[in-house]
Amino acid sequence: MITAETMLARKSVRSYDGRPIEAETLEKVKGFADRIQNPFGIPVRFVFLDAKEKGLSSPVLTGEPLYVAGKVDKVPYGDVAFGFAMEELLLFAWSLGLGSVWIGGTMKRELFEKAAGLEAGERMPCVSPLGYPAAKRSLRETVMRRGVGADGRLPGEKLFFNGDFGAPLSGKALEPWNELLELVRWAPSAVNRQPWRVVLQGGRFHFYLKHDKGYTSDAVGDMQKIDLGIALCHFACALEERGCEAAFLTEDPGLPCPADTAFIAGFHVPAKRD
Ligand SMILES: Cc1cc2nc3c(=O)[nH]c(=O)nc-3n(C[C@H](O)[C@H](O)[C@H](O)COP(=O)(O)O)c2cc1C
Image 1 (spheres, helix red, strand yellow):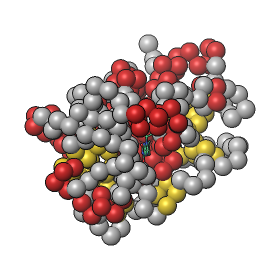
Image 2 (tube, protein in one colour):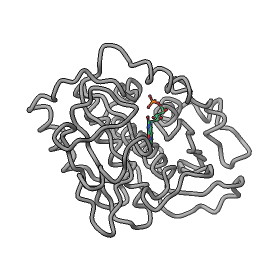
Image 3 (cartoon, helix red, strand yellow):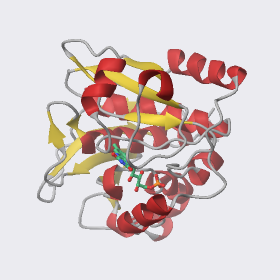
């Protein structure tokens, strides 16, 4: 199970110490990758690639021994399902002491797609290195983190709403859900844009995407829908840790939305009966 502790401790790692991953640890990660489910029921396939053997690198990384590439069919919600499944894998890897960072842009995509054996009708939206974090971050990594404000997140009142987009979720209404929503708030996203918005309505958490321009392409799909999948993954893991039964929702509740904002999916968390 992925814990709140793991989700709060996780940070992107771009500097590795060069050691290969211990065989037993790697087997656990591969086994987990084979079993991952997502609420969309869209299969996400993972391929593990030795960096040296396959000649793979990224200009933002140092010392990475291995990559994991994820592949998904070009189908509606494929990008969201991909974000969900790959985040669960990277969180599991973190819980075993392995660092990672989502890489959707800073790589030679064709080389990775070839190494991952991408087939017609499939996408390989992102990859991640996996390895043991170096004792010290590279200067480039420190500068990159500063550039995107990686150690900060938007305040909850800009992300979470009560009933409709006009009312931030706060006070008594927020209290029972605060810890859980914090885990969504601290999720990673492309360029740390945090495009997720959540409206709580009668125990239903509706997740919306506030779109920015420039995040869609045929090779990736919609990078910000991947971000939404990641946010949904954090929420689902938090529910599981608390033992909350929840129903997955795909029907748009039809709420009035701000510009460029669209419903993606949600969860109904029925009130617990004593
Ligand atoms: C879908 C996605 C794509 C990303 N692509 C890149 C990338 O190409 N290169 C990179 O250095 N970081 C990339 N990142 C990492 C983000 O910049 C990072 O998650 C964000 O700044 C927050 O920092 P944190 O993960 O340490 O909390 C990506 C993250 C996501 C979720």
